[in-house]
Amino acid sequence: MKNILPLLALLLSVSVTAQEKHSFSLDEAIAFALENNRTVINAENDIEIAKKQKWEATATGLPQISITADYQNNLKQQVSLIPAEIFGGEPGTFEEVIFGTKHNVNALATLRQKIFDGSYIVGLQSAKVYLQISENAKKKTDLEVKKSVINAYGNVLLTEENIRILEKNKEVLEKNVYETQKTYENGLAEEESVEQLQITLASVESDLQNSIRLREIAYKMLNITLGAPIETEVTLTDDLDNLAIQNTVPGLVEEQFNIENNIDYKIAENNTKSQELLLKNEKSKGLPTLEGYINGGYLGFGNSFDFFKREQEWFGNSMVGLTLNVPVFSSLGRSAATQRMKVELEKAKNDLRETEQQLQLEIQQAKSDYQFSLEQYQTKKRNLELAERIEQKNQVKFSEGMATSFDLRQAQTQLYTAQQEYLQSMIDIINTKTELEMVLHNANE
Image (cartoon, rainbow, N blue to C red):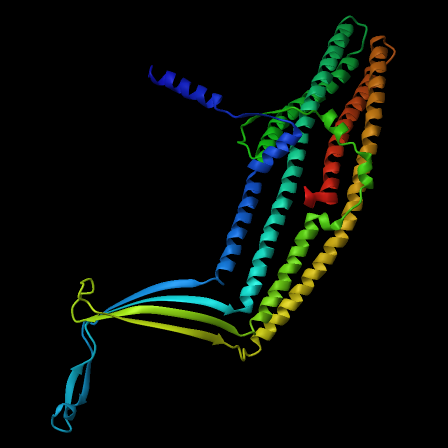
């Protein structure tokens, strides 16, 4: 037992030491996530899969070589009857004969090459479009991950700043309660004054404890978004005030919107191209196909298995040829499939037009939201300054007996609301700017 305890202590210390630690600015956090987020990694894998599928489609039109080997052991050979008179026998009688040998080996190598196949040409085009779809999906994933990192990073900063403010408010309230309690004990204040302040203090303490719990959740959510182990110790080097200032770009709402740069539009375009190729593929099935081939092989025969011996005799053979397949009648099956693909293509075109209109509306909404967040930020900042002055004045009045505890509590509650609204306005600037940039030129990100 004495030996086990030090070992456990050593293992515990090693595990604590091995815990990962990272320090990130917002840009560094985004860069880290774009390399380590599991969704991003899967999207990169999808691109690799698309590249391999593109080569698979290409390879079907290149020369194909196959080798086959066939061995037969006639355990009981088939007997045939032929007229005996062929061998000088009595007419009307038959002789039993066995054709062939007991052991046969056939080895054949075949080279095949497509000469014309409409489906193959369409398949090559489809493979290229599929790769584009995967690449655009990767861009879309990167944008969504970037947005998630900004939200998660901002939530951590918001929680940290909220805790700092609540701790400061708690400190002020504890001082108020202490001084008012002493004044009450000396008979210079009413008990209600103490109780009013205690109510406010209890509410702030509850909010503080809740914020401390939320902070742990916010850090874990950030780690998941980054693609880091959930218990990774992360330090954020940016602060909420600086990020809000950096993201205050009034001229952004005047930037022109090129719909072709939007990734959602590109994805809708890919879908239309894909449906066009499917229709083209159905039409190509009515075209003839032509394939050339050449083969060569050797045959070996024997009544005993001597194929690995030098004296075994082998007979060579070879052939060259063409295979032409001309579709003639499919009981209108190809026609129905072609008509179905035409309807699917029309649906894809409608979706593209719908996406275009939705994006036009989305850009207007994003610009409006960002402009509103800029205005709200300035408004909430002024409101906070006013609420702080009002609360300070009521602090002085209360200490001098010129204001009641109820008046002070109202001023404090107003201040706390202004503090929360100001914090939220900073987060709103960061998030709405992210949304606007994603719509404006996200395909170039």
